[in-house]
Length: 426
Ligand SMILES: [Zn+2]
Image (cartoon, rainbow, N blue to C red; front, side, top):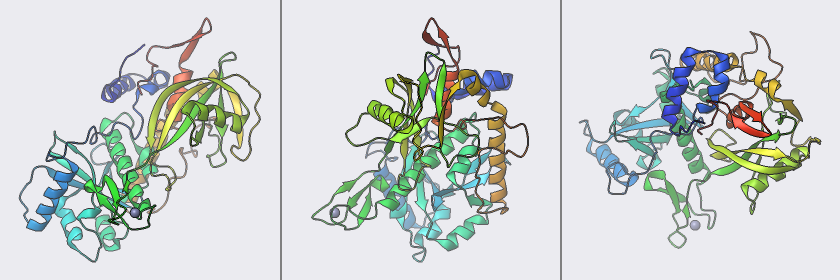
């Protein structure tokens, strides 16, 4: 059993192994990847208030710089990521061998629009994301949805506001820089969406204003002063397993693209434990009774509905006690038991790599102004290649890792063991 716990080591291993082999090894190395949107390199910990990189100190420095009109190099430096309607500014990675990159702006580039009152953005519109001591930079995000003139100006630089889901599919999951930028963009989107949803105090109705460089908000009514913190909505996601017959339960929702099957998932109700939610959701959706529930890993998911700025997908193996399926057609289109062999076949490396390259090409086209506004609607380019009878979501989704971890287990004397290299480090 491997005891790798660092995402960077995992990525190194994955890259090394990938270059040496093709799909069979992929099946055993897949779970070594860190989850998409986790492992954010700029938010390992928030510096203490007196640190020049802390939200409060950095905002004060930023305000001083903006008012001084100085163009001298500063320490720490500042980089700002603009968003429009939940989409980060991004550029194609075709020039530097990457699949895409974020469209960071310098303080000088932001100065113009932050000082332009017609644009309606000020220093308080900037939201602190985190810092990196090694490159001496504090990172910020800003929502420029209302600043239409600014948007066309940014478009001239061959940058484009791209759906986070498109970037997610386009991300090269073996590239630590790509994965890091995706995590930063996910965190930034979650924070900005939360700010949009929390414009007013839910208690007295007065305006809620940003505090601590956007890390929290507070009611502006001096008699109320209610505090608001960014929220996370937990969702349980479970692979339901039939140990005796060596098969797993996968479901299909009507919104899925054709041939896609995935794990069951559901929201947690107030007053319920995670394990209880796993058992209740499985029973409600499929009529299957679950006994033992084993935690696997969790993934931030900032690409869900806009009413939920950031979901936290909490993944479990759920061992079935009953096996007869009764699908709740309001929740699911279908649910079936699938053998380990069939699921193994559905995990085809070539298709995931193809989907990633297709999405990266889409980002490039969008940044060049081709097909602007068109969304990537499917995971796979199904125009070419052999059609697999079923597939599961790509490596950007926790469902992929749950399923891959199970597929790579081997049964021995009734006990489940991990094959070498298949241990999840997530
Ligand atoms: Zn209030």
